[in-house]
Image (cartoon, rainbow, N blue to C red):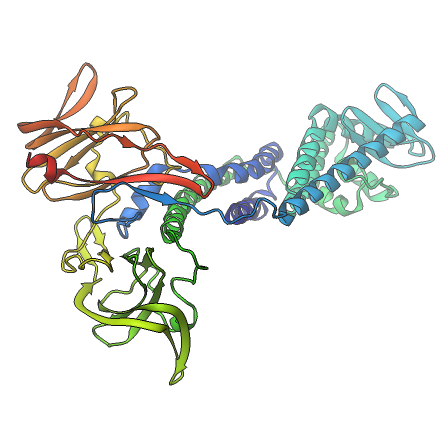
Amino acid sequence: MVQYILQILILQISFLAIYDFLLKKDTFFNWNRIYLILTPIASLILPFIKIDFFKTETSQVYVSKLERIITVSSENITAITINNTSSNTINWWLIAYFTGVLTNIIILALKLNILKSIATKTKSKNNIVILPNSSQAFSFWNTIYIGDTLNTKEKEQILIHETVHLSQKHSLDQIWFELLKIVLWWNPIIYIYQSRVTILHEYIADAIVVKTINKKTYIQQLLNTTFQTQEIPFINQFYNQSLIKKRILMLLKTKSKTTSKFKYLILAPVLIGILIYTSCSDNENQIKNSTTIENSKNLNSSKPLISQEPKCPNQNSLYEKKLDNYLSIRNGKNHEAIINIISVETSKKIRTIYFSKNQTYFSRNIPEGKYKLHITYGEDYAEKMVDGKCLAYFKNEKEKVTNENLFDFNGVKTDTGYHTPSYSISLDKSFIDPNKKETLTTRRTNEPECPNQNAEYNNELDNYLKITSSKNSESIIHVTSIKSSKSIRTIHLGKNQIYLIKNIPEGKYQLHITYGKNYSEKTINGECTAYFKIENKKTINKNILDFNTLKTDRGLNVPSYNLDLSIDDNK
């Protein structure tokens, strides 16, 4: 929510900056009116527009990211979001917001009541209300309010001016911004927008009036009339001291050239930039949320959770935010553990991680280099200062282990991008081979465009199906819906390749797998189909992959799966 509010403010400030610096001084009043009415609502909608093209293509230029948990087994894993908010907690932010909404509704009602009381206390004829003993002049909705002390010539000019406001429905614009001020009362930019629209209304009316009245006479009247105006912000006031100077300057301004309209074209690159930003920021948020989900797993923990990277012993920890790598560690059921990640090059500790029993944690953003792990098992976590450094230790220490296997986190540049290695280890079992790097790409190059014309995605679900392909042959996988018997995704994998099929819609699926070589495509009955010119075998994986999410009292369970095709290939 905070990010959405910041995006609204940034977008509205950007749109207003374009208006003030490029468009405000031009005489294209009706164009500017449309601009000022539409851009506030555009700023509310644009953050929700996510274009997959921008989301995927822009990330490919720099690095292919690992977005989800990688496990070494073929078990079904479940990601759980823990909801720690008590049902009895009072949301003061929500109360403050609705208090502001209610206050602004009351203010608007009072303004309307003022106008109603003026109309009922004074004479009216043909939608014209005569104000006794007054030189005021303004209009709202379909009514003109005019003072009886004005002379006949002034009244004629004012009536022409105010009639323009009525005919062009300027009151609708003002009501629109009053409604926005109710919903976005906390946003100062909306008030600036309304002031810009108000002066624009006067420019529009003045421009039409001087077509029928001598311009010098009209300007002279604006200068000589006594300025008395009822303070109701959303009415169209004829006499407003703060606007008179701007109106006169605009009346004296030469009409803008038609070529100046090309300034509006600057909106095209601005909108593209905004869509790139919102699409990519959404992608980054999914990665961050994924990290939060994964690192929130604390299975069967009966004691209060200590931060997995405690603040004190991590005062000098090193992080490389540009690298979306990880070291996934699962602790066993027998002991708590403290792990120090040690740089082989400098012999210095870059990170300290604490684990309770039966817990999984992802240590992310590890700087490039080679590392080994110093592991301590025990109970009763504590901290102490030794030679000015904060150290983590167990009061009841069981065992210390130095794992000499090297974890090489140096990235590898290839023609498909920058691959970042990541590792998964279990403290109860032997380490996986640290020389084997899991390098994945989230690019959809393995989902050919032609047979995926009708592919289905749900970008709101950060699930995946991780597939390790056969070492013996290429494979084509159809993710087929049990309910409709239709393929929602077609994947082509080379030999010994790892790929994540992401954003799978809720439902139950089976995999139809073809092994072979010489990948090709053909159209049958108007549908593009992937096939191998040399086909070795076809099989249907018997496992039912249930991607339906489950709501529990602990949060939302989002299922994901791992599958090794070598098992099917060797049958």
